Length: 54
Image (cartoon, rainbow, N blue to C red):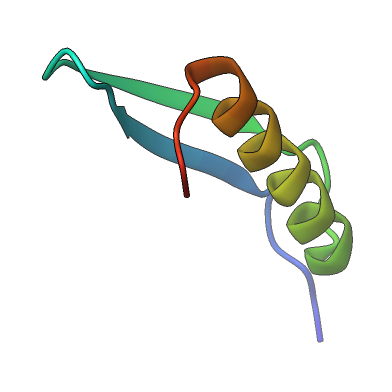
């Protein structure tokens, strides 16, 4: 199976002050397993930075 383009992560963080922030990150890989691992690290970092639960 031919792989297509690079994977991206798009997230909207809804903050406690009723604002929202849209974040986009290139995962810089075409491999789905690598992309998932990188996405999970980004989610963990976002949770810690914004002090939110996923």
